[in-house]
Length: 534
Image 1 (cartoon, rainbow, N blue to C red):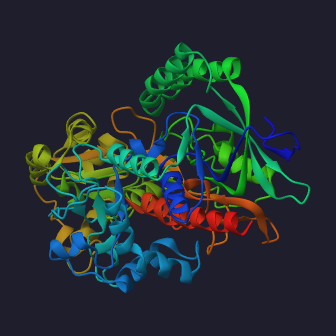
Image 2 (cartoon, rainbow, N blue to C red):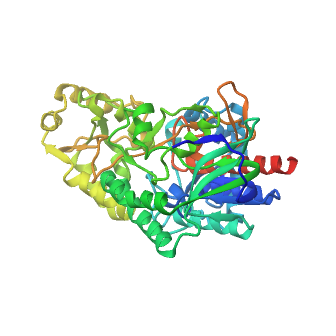
Image 3 (spheres, helix red, strand yellow):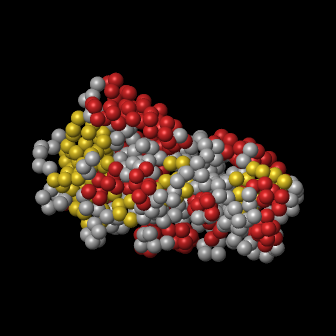
């Protein structure tokens, strides 16, 4: 497929700002551009929502949000900045990271003003995702970095039962409709149109608008039926999605849309493109691809064809969550050589990355009888259904058991001598060798012992979700895409996982959606200003 080129034919439609992709980043770009006075048209290959609608709906925010204050939590933008700097590094400039933190509380208020509900009930234990009783929680590794910054709960889960991303996407979509933003679904952008000066002036698409009703209905239903199987059973998902692509090729008609101010690419990442993963991140295999078939790298390729440069395409976040139940964090995480892998209380992406770097990406969590019993007791109260069946399987079938640490190591194929040394160091008293907070350390002294297999590999019962973090390089003041020489690509902006952003080095829950809001608003506002100037 050709992703770029100069074309001179007539336009079928005109807008000030054209947004490609309609998840959180696209919707926020559209709202911001419309509020700046632009006529906005959003295009989506499917029906909108993207990975946002599948997500947990968590926004990483702090610095003293309304929800934090209502929960009695003290937080400052500086504390948030100090923690995130340890996670983010130099992926974005210090000025951009500071701006992200200082604007964080206002971003939550902005979303609330669009009808996105938040709530202040604080989760009292460490978890990968809270139950329907709690909507504010420690969603990263804040306690493990307490020596750098005062920890605070910054995971703001949208107030909805189950996974909350669907409501977030719906409220953002409603906000765009209220502002008169046009949405053209079932429209796949195939080319960026450029003028003689290299400026991006519009898009060329293939759309099902105008196709017969049965074609549009079949396209929508087949896509919906393929999304969930595509996550858990990739081969089945690909098979179910082939008719979707066929309908687009057979019944789609060409549509050319002019963008007076600019095009904003918000088409997600590339976790569903096997060739891009093989090229840029070949070691990330065996993970569960978190996204939709729209996360196929097409937005990134569109930008590259127009002259934009990329960065951090090798960065993929792969997650191995140990909790819930919370007592699992008291276990000892070891590799096949019996050596400690990392602080078990770290966020699942940090744990997953550490396991991936271990021999054969294999890992086991050592529990004693007392700890395993407490984990089983916590199961129902601390888990939603998708967490419960995984934890129950790990604690029942995904383990081996024996009377001593050495015996259980031999059963699991772990070095018994090294495991004994690692356990002795863990139980020696004083600061934990891996830096685990003292309140998470457990004695592990009651037989029998279990080694729970928490390896990063392809398992339906205990998957390791992953998403891509890199994308197009952008000007951090405007969101305009940048070429290899650092100059801007005129008329082209990017946001969300199509672009390099705050979370492009490492990820904690809510940071990607928070970056989608931050970068989407930035790009939409800049494109609208350029449209007015033009």
